[in-house]
Image (tube, rainbow, N blue to C red; front, side):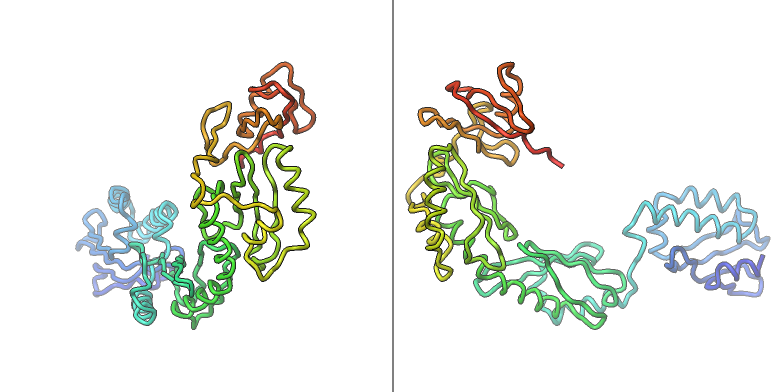
Amino acid sequence: MESSLVKDNPLLFPLNKDKSVYDGFITVQDRDYRMRILLPPDQQLKQAKLYCSWQLRHLLRGYELIVKQRLQQSADLVSFILELKTVLEVGLKSRPECRSIPPPQYYSQLISEMETLGWDKLLFIDMEFRTLRLKAVDSSARQHTLTVQLKSKHPAETPDCSADLPVPLLLTWTPQSTLEQLHTQFLLVLESLTEFWDVMDEIDSKTWILEPEKPSRGDTMRRIAMGNNVSIKVEVDPRHPKMLPECCLLGAEHVVTPLRNKLNANMHLWNPDSSVLHNLQDVLEIEFPSPATHEKSSFNIECGICYSYRLDAAIPDQVCNDPRCGQPFHQACLYEWLRALPSSRQSFSIVFGECPYCSKPITVKMAAQKS
């Protein structure tokens, strides 16, 4: 038994000649857990006492009764250690956060790095000292958050980093890197996107945005209200924000067609040195309604079928083309309405039918399925 115990658990040693006290570590999934076993004079496990480190005690929480039963039933110490390892493996599977508890130097390293970076940059840290949210302020005084998930072997392992950006976050890391260096790289990324956010902030402040309802720093699309039941969806390139964005006009065809013609005819007038908003107004030959001139309620016209403005995240974007009607509908509502009518017909993904309000011809594409 002795040779088998040493072979399977080389870090667990007897502390006396009687071999009634064993102290050391057992290894499970490449992690070492400190423990001590006290055996009675007759060496019977039924009266043995098991002492665990706090990590091992935390991992065995909820399994105490099973461990006690294994202690009572095992024939010898080798069998018990084997049973204990099995219980620990089950515990590790059910508690992924316990799989890799960082060594003490992890915490001293983290505190040292935060001292250098500055505690004022720390917005949040979780109870396990793994997830950090760091504050970063760009040259235009916009505040951003860098989320850093450290690995147990920090800084030897590359942390996972994420942020609300319109482009992939690419940061370099070596075993010699620090949180301060990571933060500095993040600031450089923010500066490269300053012009993009200037463009989006101007659009957000000087027009009525229909979608997204609450734009984030990572959103590159804006649906801008142009009038009653007519809007333009623009997709701005974050790497070239002053260039002509992708544009899609939405609304009744008799309103959209003249605007589309102006967009195509005046595209050559686009000036990369001017703001995107100014260029759009020049090319479309319009003035966008703004918070200074219009109430947003002027554009929040409810769906003619469900009588609500927002349906999940969607707003009414299907409009009857009859100038005397112009009633808007949610795409999903109109699709379901027309599909239920015997007089409607479907060709591939398009349903042809009559407007629920004026009975004039209206079409709608099949609503996209949510993934």
